[in-house]
Length: 540
Ligand code: NAD
Image (cartoon, rainbow, N blue to C red; front, top):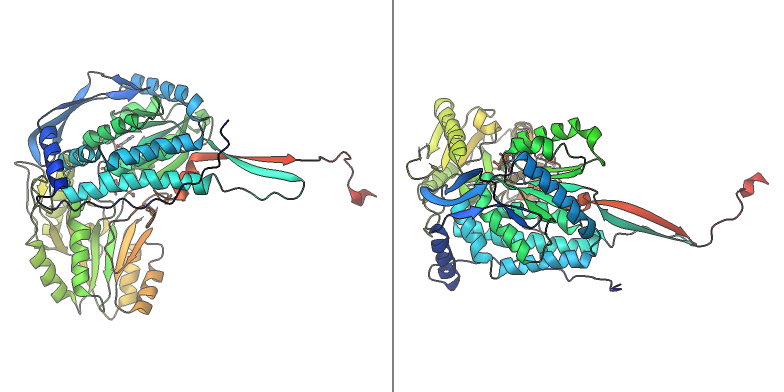
């Protein structure tokens, strides 16, 4: 029995590659993209370490190029999902008893593999499959996922397991941070490869086993992440990779007595549906399932008239249009006082006109395509509504000839509760409401109460005392709040991420708050010299 007490050194955030034209990192990534674009991958389910080809396949195409057929994916049936549950329970026997340092070692090795030999593959597959530019892929698929793995391992070893109760004289108290009995179901979104990688691995790090259902449109990169985890030494069955139609999960996964946790990121509607489904099955479960969900947003930028106007414009452009506005944190509504609006508007419109959009493998593009036909139809539907009920100041165009392209669009809404100010669009559409500079408090109240979400928000003001007052009145409007910065780009261990209200359970991915959801603590009290008389002194 090993008697080492481990403490890990605090990791550093993974440096972001610049991918300057002509640099060695650019040449290497481009070569990887070229070879990946030239093949059609056959993606199986991976259950108990075995590749399972079901024959029920669908194809994956690049969002920016309909002709680029990247993969065929084998979807799991309800029966195969049942096999995955069984495989997870088999793996649970040993993994749940495996020492923390061994588990941490797997994910630290995964981080090193991703930082080194796997970086290009995971970045290239994210660029091709999810239509991210090289920079957007790098900060997501490489840096954020590396950070999740390294910081989670460090937090588990140095914070969660070391958190122990007091022991008074004559006794010894301690907590055994047990994994949950059963399996955790990780259901992941299309928009971040890092979230795909984090949701099944955070519970696995804490000794749990998982079923991982990736989003259909992120399958290429997510499959490479799964293969990387195998290479890192993750034992068979600890994470089971199960692409499937959501309906297949209803009975086989949510109806299983072993279902003990949901780690979800995606839309609010789906999370609410899964919560209801869980509640209906409650009597079947052996333990109350942990429900952790990060969901939608209607993220805002709120400017005071003292704001630095250039900084405000840059925050709006990057916050609203990077990755085509498909970040959960993307700025999609903005409040600007009438006293500075003409200048801010003219600068915004001029800069939007300079944005280049197209194939993400062309390094000069700032934007690429939206994820799929459904997203394209939803977003262009909102553009139509804006054309009819508000004023389009820039963009408003779209095309599906080559890929799913929607122009960066700026909408001025006289009505602060116009539909594009209220609903999550998840595309490159920024709606602005211009408020009376003399009615700051009314405008702040409007911002706080317009949407059911509370994910991210930013305020811009030079006057710091005033900024504090604004931050106070928006205290519950965002789980990630920024002062004089864009509302996107949270970094692991620096700005733990998540929101409340309709945006989720706020269990902060990449924070200790998240890891503790995946343990069931057992408190042990040992008494050294137990009493041998049952009577108390007051009895005389
Ligand atoms: P989505 O809700 O459509 O899908 C998310 C996942 O749920 C996918 O794997 C999907 O296949 C699965 N799913 C859908 N219906 C299901 C069902 N009935 N049963 C089981 N699984 C089901 O979301 P998306 O389009 O992939 O991602 C975009 C959404 O995610 C946006 O709303 C965005 O705000 C949100 N998001 C939030 C965060 C955050 O941290 N708060 C981060 C990223 C994305």
